[in-house]
Length: 142
Image 1 (cartoon, rainbow, N blue to C red):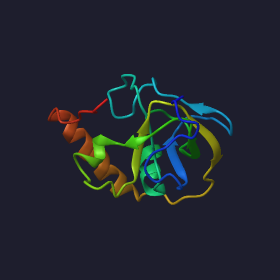
Image 2 (tube, helix red, strand yellow):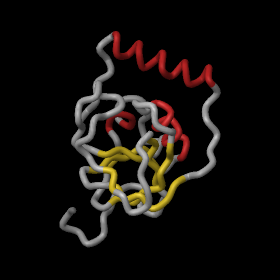
Image 3 (cartoon, rainbow, N blue to C red):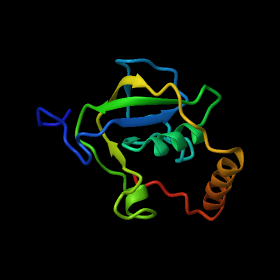
Image 4 (cartoon, rainbow, N blue to C red):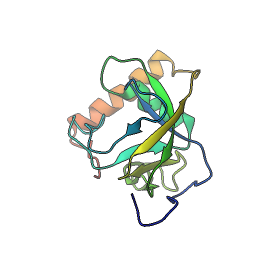
């Protein structure tokens, strides 16, 4: 937890989402220190989330594992910041509304219905990520 009574960060009044395959429920915490989907399975010191449902859809569709794809509605328990993996490198100005925090995210609900990407669009994204990995450009700023 941070020193402030109320956590702060960009998009403070937004609804936040986290896409995953983890089977959790309201009140559960998503914690930093877990293996990242885009970090070759190594633990990350941040937890990632977004104020854009589209970003969370990508998160659950690309998440490692065989569990059901889920999008949780979350609230940060500590301060949060722009995700430099996207905002500094790919999408200046943060149009994806992607953030990260070193504090846990509390699950407050689940998005029950959302439209997945068409299979060819999802495969194109996976191919692009595989290409970045093959080129050694799949670096995560942790």
